[in-house]
Image 1 (cartoon, helix red, strand yellow):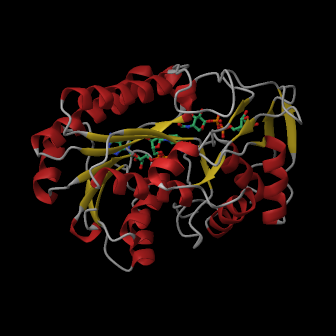
Image 2 (cartoon, protein in one colour; image 1 turned 90 degrees about the horizontal axis):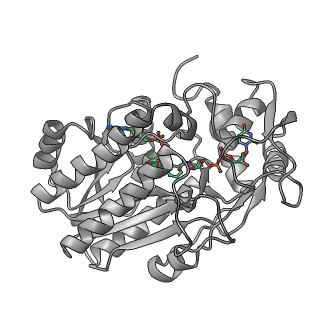
Image 3 (cartoon, protein in one colour; image 1 turned 90 degrees about the vertical axis):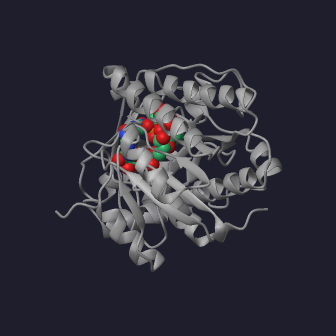
Length: 344
Ligand code: NAD
Ligand code: WQD
């Protein structure tokens, strides 16, 4: 296995929600990390928080991953041995309204990154894919060999991203790629110093619940209670962002050990309903989360959860944290930073 201390890892989307937690996990594992972000969906304050948490000044370049000249400069300066590529737009609804922006950023960015990697002889990449590539599940839990389908432009960008990496590996076996299919990332670092800070109205359940609990929003809308699930509300595989971050460390180790390319689920294997999550959040926060049941949200599926066996077998990784811990850590972050990274 390569020595972590000798390895420079370039992290794109590094100041984002998952990127910032993974940055810390990689530093703890002994990697040298260079972060890149254009702050299109994150705050520079993250860098100050990372400095406090890690006790070192983050090595950071502000750049757009679609900008070939800027990325060439980053590669020439830092000479990374591996990439973890988070930078992308991620709002499903927005992707249906602005498909070109999503294809340009998510696909254009990935192609540019891969061209720079090839130019600089760096052919190991961990890619942020998503459970959305399974479309409407035919059966559960979802194994990696389940049928794939893109059900919105965002999902298409993840499916195409996986395909690009697979084709690269087929054309040149020196490429070692890991596509990680995240289920529903939630929670925050246990310090409460970094966490998810959505701009505008949160699209995702836990950040919305957190903002209701802290008093920023009045009530949660529960999107449908007539699904064929135990309590009628949607069931998802929520995974602590700290577990997800460790999954990236494990995937990177796997690639640096010279293993083959891999596509794996990162989930817990356990589904929770919307109402179960609401109750867990109320217990963790000691706050009420009032809600109204409203019609289903277009494009939602009844239930979605992972079979996480492959990640355990191949990467030696499994999720450790339960829903209570996810809610407790989310609440610590939300209550310490009611307005996220921005001052009120
Ligand atoms: P995020 O928006 O918090 O982080 C993404 C970061 O990328 C942001 O800091 C943003 O400023 C940056 N970025 C976007 N476009 C860029 C560009 N052109 N150049 C440089 N930086 C750019 O999102 P996240 O939740 O941390 O997600 C990280 C990755 O994981 C994304 O690829 C996302 O699609 C994927 N993913 C997220 C989820 C989820 O629910 N959070 C689930 C599955 C997959
Ligand atoms: C979870 C459950 C909703 C908000 C999305 C993307 C997916 C991936 C993760 C990036 C569902 C219900 C939600 C609310 C609610 N992202 N809900 N009220 O839809 O499983 O996945 O994020 O790759 O691609 O689609 O997550 O958190 O939006 O919803 O009732 O205000 O909560 O109906 O059952 P989802 P979510």
